[in-house]
Length: 113
Length: 113
Image (cartoon, rainbow over all chains, first blue to last red; front, side):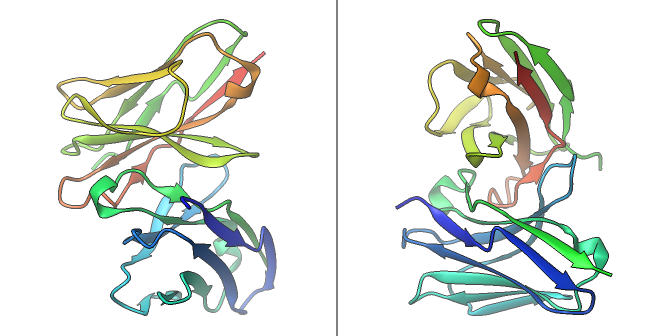
């Protein structure tokens, strides 16, 4: 019940296209859903996050869509660029144990020039 | 502000040895968390320290321990190393205003031979 399931495992998108990564969770106590971006040799970096009281959050080219009833959320990267090539992790946590983040398995995104 | 720093960046040990990893959080951050990242298990939460006290703990054996000092710097210790402990160990710090927002260091790559 603590798992966060992420798909796809890898994704290839043409430059300028839309990259979509999906995640699903079981534990309804989760109340914070961040996305992290990780480049080789670096630690994960917080990209964007959402709380379950909103259905969508947009920051620049990155948008999180959240479906509370389906217990699913997704990351959309618009106008994908080669510099977006990285591994993306969705995650979830509970406010009372905020630091205990449960991560998805990751999606390796490659943007073709 | 300087980011989270971890030392050493790379470490090679043999089975049965013990190892200590160090983490310096972002200035002003009192929460420090540790994560293990492996290709097979992904990113897994180890534990979190706040004001020198362990506040949250993941599902790892007692061979994994940590501590935090009064200046918020943290160390993680793994005793009786096993081959399966080979991983990237990530430290993250968070501000008091938002424990959810974890800022990760570059990690320590531990190889157990």
